[in-house]
Length: 245
Length: 245
DNA sequence: CGGGACGGTTGATCTCGATCAATGCGGGTC
DNA sequence: GACCCGCATTGATCGAGATCAACCGTCCCG
Image 1 (cartoon, chains in turn green, yellow, red, cyan):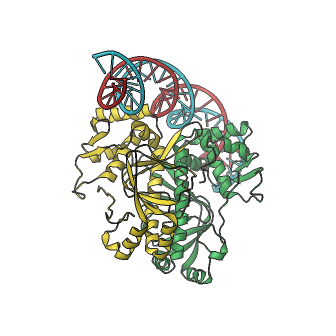
Image 2 (image 1 turned 30 degrees about the vertical axis):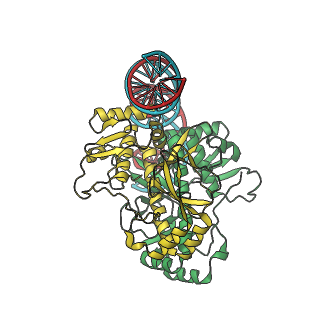
Image 3 (image 1 turned 90 degrees about the vertical axis):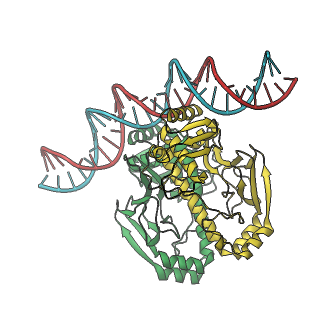
């Protein structure tokens, strides 16, 4: 198995899987004209469902959740946003979900009208946005399998595996993956909301995986996966599809 | 509340929400050159996860599911494909999910390389594909709320409401919605796989909704919703977000 | 230093949906 | 007609995860 971290070009705030050869100078210059950076504290709302947004941003540092809360307080997190993910949708004025900073978050903002104009001028950006959106769509559908059919234990394992894949700064990508150290950007409550579980079940299953030697828990927000393959087996997935995010 | 059926242009197999003014003659002519129609019987596989696809298609008639099956047989349907939805992803060679015809399905096929070339020539198509993909993304995330946080009864109600919204050929779209008649394109098993339930629970909850007068069941594949608003209330959702698909 | 707020863990019990099992029902073939 | 087969429904029971509740460790603040 290979870990497949998303490569991104440090010079360009819009993520893409290709290398920097794709970022031509004109595009970078035009993007630079309309972008600005902004930092929010942990817990800050970055967007509210239905609220009109005059800008479109991508996360540069930090971590956020995208969620919906039902009338009676039940909450489901539908996406975990990490550096290079975008907030708001290109060409849309509103987000259908609440976005909230989990830690201090720095975003790169583009004024929406100016960005839309830029996309019209540089069609290359539209196709890159399409690729990014297709990736998000795959991830959202993969997650439906986790939510709909996996047990609590499998959900936790799938979550840790997907987080490891996204955070992975693992060098030997083609060899067998050794121990992986993870920082959890979420509280137990946020994990539970992402997995469709309660806090208690989340906590118990983490304890169970720890007692079974599949993970180590050096700190409340720290996880070590001694054997990545072994944990991946706990997801019940055959690995073909790849639960990515 | 308004029902918001997807409008589509009969002359153009690629769905879009805008009216036909957007379909210019050149585009239609170019599309016509590379498209062909094909029909599959009910139950036929339209794509297999991971399999390489040399074409990209959109559904013209019939209904299909997109699903993943875990090693031990548990299956989750991640999307219900109806006319105007596409199979395969633009610019991608493989689908991460299995696609299977629920009824006889007619698709409009585009040879993948030719289609990609066309998209490069007509950037307008790329932005339309982006819009379609963003809609699918919203729908997939909405569905995560259903899978992760709703009870069995709420899941059934949400499914029927979303199906009604998609099938709706309701005239008075701005007035209060009256009775809605639905044809179910899925078996109980397919519904269960879509909702993350078992067949038995699905059947029991349909019976319960019927006994409570929220739906009528004139046939196994027929549902009448006498009061659309009342059924929508059963979803636990406040309607703001709108569970669409 | 005491107190309390917060996040996390653990225990006891309950409940909803899964599971196992039987029955119904319509449509097909021989 | 007799039979069967696939799908749906209904009943009985079980169990995973929710719920209710207690407790623990850490940090902050007076």
